[in-house]
Length: 517
Image 1 (cartoon, rainbow, N blue to C red):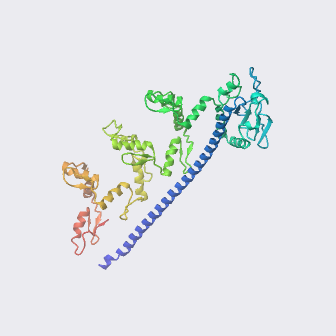
Image 2: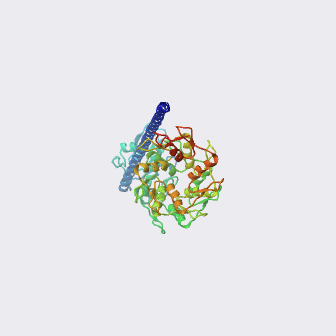
Image 3: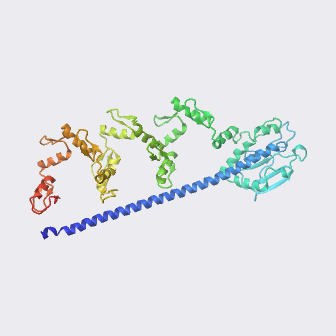
């Protein structure tokens, strides 16, 4: 008896050591994952903060420039008979001869910013004449000069800006994007004011005439981004748009018109921007890159959705079950679980699906296609997820752990089923008797006891069985395989139940002393 028990000590130590190794590796793995997730979140938050700060600084500059131009408009309205300031780029506005009929005005814009100046300064050349020189060639301040007498006389206290304001304005113009905003701001000096000042004459060449400058229409369209105004409404739905062109593009969704075609395939698109994005599928171009990982994307919207995998943001919420999603498309698909909608139908059988991807996977059951192959064995799979799970049989990975015992599982579904052994839950019930089961497969097998169905057949003796496990055991009668061995004698058995019965013949031995060879 002592000889038989002697190997148990080392075996127990080996088992305990193995369990401790598994637990230690699992703990290290979980700690590493938590650290990696935390680090990625911190990096993302830091990046978003920097971008937000940059955007706020830029907006502050733009708001300051808009304040300047609002002041320009207010003061110019009060002293329009005396002077008019226009803002334009130095390479657009040139001195022009005085148009005929302009008796009250000198040459428009004959004072220009001096390029190559060594410092910013304010020059007073004559009453009513102001000039600002700067390193920046982006901005030129032009003035209408009074003659020094009469209604056009302009004194130093009538200046539209103080010296400090002009210096601040000049510093703003050094930023290219702000300079563009300043350029748009010149439209605040309306054409009507200029026409009234010049006796109804035409605009001076190069100023407010569209030579490289935005006209009133562009300025009006831009201002709608600030006011939120959407004057163009669709007469077939409730959507409204800021731009007439946007409404025109939207109307194609109702008419089905697709004027833009791909010259490499047969696809057509309703918008030129959609065609441009589609062309990247042919060229392989992916201009949008994630700054948290190495992934790249062909569309900015795809990058935006991907960034939520780092930030864990889920802005879309189901109002029926409170679940949240990172993409609106995922919420739309989820809503079908409540409505029961299954818009995708298999044309070979009666099955319907909520997702197009689910239909695509299902079609492989008809075609027999198995595009995913294991590179360590000859098995092939119809779904990439099945291959991923299968690979764990080679690696031994079991990422899903029961928090009530030490067992681990390679699949989340196996863990879910295992948890029912702790909770006692048996959600699957036979509608012909009172029995309940933890697994749907067990219920399915049980139903064959009522239907007498035996779908599994032995190809050597034609016997049929209701379960695959019973067929597997039966096959051992043909192969002679006996995998269950008694550890008290040399006898072997083909089934565990036969071994269990045999163990009762040994006095003092528990019938649980089963060894699977």
